[in-house]
Length: 259
Ligand SMILES: NC(=O)c1ccc[n+]([C@@H]2O[C@H](COP(=O)([O-])OP(=O)(O)OC[C@H]3O[C@@H](n4cnc5c(N)ncnc54)[C@H](OP(=O)(O)O)[C@@H]3O)[C@@H](O)[C@H]2O)c1
Image 1 (cartoon, helix red, strand yellow):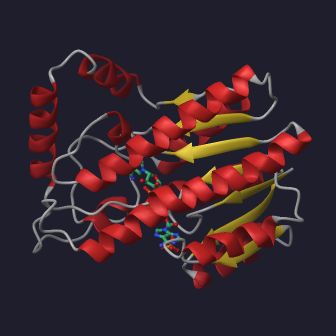
Image 2 (tube, helix red, strand yellow):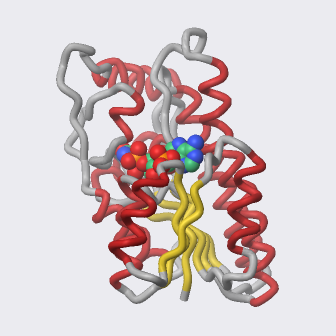
């Protein structure tokens, strides 16, 4: 059994790699950081392949798919992603387009190409990493929240198509709340609630995916808040998210918190 993991160099992606390796899976790992990829390959052994790529560049996404084409991938983990904090009119447009390319376009391309291959063999699993942000509108992190809405909606739609086809191929969308990774540092924010560990998030997603479940939301408290949000008027919901995000803004003089 072999899995392709995007964003494998850090956080949740790295945890997916460790946990799949423990289960005896062979891995294809991708990310931009070649040094980390080489280090992971050294630690995880000869059955681990690496393909450095910047997924904000469409050509590089196709390069990753081409690399995997003859490698009998059984599981695609579409995990690479990040957020950009700030008011919509103030964030850098080029940075944001790169983020959309990683969070949406790369995920979309890989999901489609691997789904076609998986359907030919009538087996395979796709795990798309979204976020609880994907159930909400997110002032001050607007494009990130919007990108994760896309990931959830696309995943649910594909899952329903597969269900109608009585396919053995499945899609699971992981929707965690805060996870203790490098995500916040990159976005320039602090945690507002206690984060879960990346190992917990990855293990939870794998269990749900192997059980064929479509939505994977770690932690009951997160599930409950998503449920409650369904009944809130949108103004109240977005006002709450605004206040949560505003409180997360990092003091630039404070020491960075990493994994
Ligand atoms: N941490 C949270 O609180 C949280 C909550 C909900 C959902 N998520 C989602 O979880 C996923 C993983 O994030 P994380 O929390 O594990 O953060 P992380 O530690 O910052 O990891 C992000 C990963 O994405 C890769 N990546 C970023 N930009 C890339 C690019 N242009 N091309 C290729 N790879 C790129 C990074 O690899 P390189 O730097 O090597 O390129 C890294 O491996 C993301 O989709 C994120 O939205 C995170």
